[in-house]
Amino acid sequence: MKSKLEILNRKLEAGKLGGGKNRIEAQHKKGKLTARERVHLLMDEGSFEEIGALVVHRTQDFGMDKQLFYGDGVVTGYGTVNGRLVYVFAQDFTVFGGALSETHAEKICKLMDLAMKTGAPLIGLNDSGGARIQEGVRSLGGYADIFYKNVLASGVIPQISAIMGPCAGGAVYSPAITDFTLMVEGTSYMFVTGPNVVKTVTNEEVSSEELGGASTHSTKSGVTHLTAVNDVECIAQIKTLLSYMPQNCEDTTPKAAYVLGDEYRAGLENIIPQNANQPYDIKTVIEGICDEESFFEIHPYYAENIVVGFVRLAGRSIGIVANQPMSLAGVLDIESSKKAARFTRFCDCFNIPLLVLVDVPGFLPGTDQEWNGIITNGAKLLYALSEATVPKVTVITRKAYGGAYDVMNSKHIGADLNYAWPSAEIAVMGAKGASEIIFKKEISEAEDPAQKLLEKEAEYAEKFATPYLAAERGFIDEVIHPGETRRKLIKAYAMLENKVVKLPKKKHGNIPL
Image (cartoon, rainbow, N blue to C red):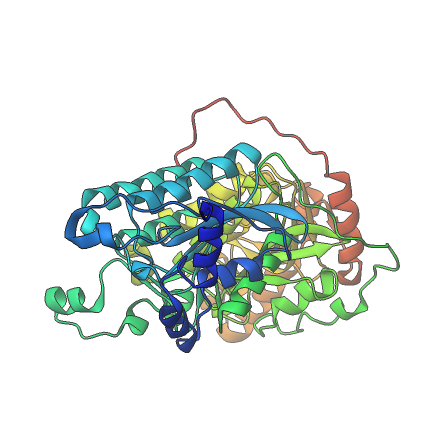
């Protein structure tokens, strides 16, 4: 008589732990890997241990009692990625289209509980048609159980969601709660209501790709942080992302091996243009400061007027928030404020120090911004940086005007060290606008008003549009030569490594959502 183990092994060989060989082949024809292929590609070779491989659903209705597949449409387990423990679930589209059942959800929740208990990241590989209709409210309850555990785990362990197929309806809210969302171009989509419902309700005709594809969510909505051309690249991005973060909120990111040498970077000396209105690429500054080829940008195609991402500095993982003069002159607007605030809060959750590079002429004016809440959205970034207790260092490269100076990690909201390049301009507003207000009468009465305005601009700029007045007041700790920036930052973060801040006792703050 054959043992259950022998039967299980035969079913595994025959493809019965998925939806069968035909469906696996169909998955490959779509350019997608199967759930098990994804898991084994993610994990270190031989490290994956499956949990719940023999689980089957409990539904007896609609002929479901005759359709039983081991695992019930989701592969769950643990293993290592680059030698570090992680937990993973991968929805199997070859079983009922990856639809979530009560037992499917129970497997995921059990995995999340283990991840919380042991303090290790959770990775979800999503590829599901949604709730399993035959189970009714039991499948809906399963989603809610997952959402609740996502919230409990938030800020305790890193949570990463990869959308590698369909993800629609209530299913989208679990990835939305996690820390980072990745999507695969051409084969994945996310939306609350699909194209058919949209057409019925609003009479709009839109494809799944236009409504919720990777391009849409990486450029327009900001729902997804990274996109990949295929499953293999997506999994490689997950591995890279994990390398910049710790295992949990009580851990720190392991330092990469680095030998200190001559850390002076002459390439930073001539980046700032002579003309204050001429743009330059802040990514050039970032790459000049960080360890070689260590810059990993997050949200690269959304709200491009601000740049966020991870770098290494002498092997140490650092989170970067930087204004981008190449896009909208680097102003803060609704989207860029939300993008930077979200990233700031992630870094603060997981003990990743922050570096803020400032070249900001202010907040974007206009009725569109005001009517859509630039006040509360701009306040999100202010709140996030004020609340953050990790080491926080600021470098002002050029403009730091008005309220945006305050918001971008100024000394006044808790920055530990603030540096400025000699090209920095710290003022309420630009010299031209300030002169037109302060010297309005004098300019209007002059024989040559245009010439008088230029004179007053120069006078204002000499007095206020420099970093030295702020340095005299202690708002800037040091005016540094651009080439010295990397050297200064390495020493600063080493000094701040054991920083401890005790916040006032509270349940939690009330961020302006």
